[in-house]
Length: 137
Image (cartoon, one colour):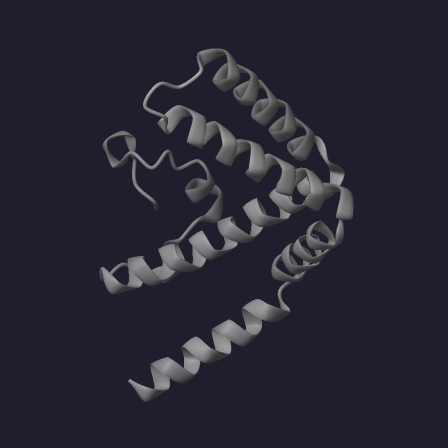
């Protein structure tokens, strides 16, 4: 078991050197440093909280709730249109796909399957619904 833990640590270190991980971390740092984006996110969170409070009132003001909902949606659109956020979303998706592939190989191995049969291209088309699956081989 100690050998497996050492291999897991080595995998973790290798992961932190992978270009996909490095791109993700760089995009996250750029995202965090984008003051305009962070201001939009803060404003979005406050408006969303205002909307939630309005909706939770015993007698919510429907017009105010509708106006707040419109503001929340507009802010969300601005956030998602931000170039830092778009880069972050793309880098995060690529990194999550890499982690998913690693987890699939480990799960296949734990289930007694040959890890060399893992095909990342086939896994990328996975719908998550095993009933529609033709198999991962």
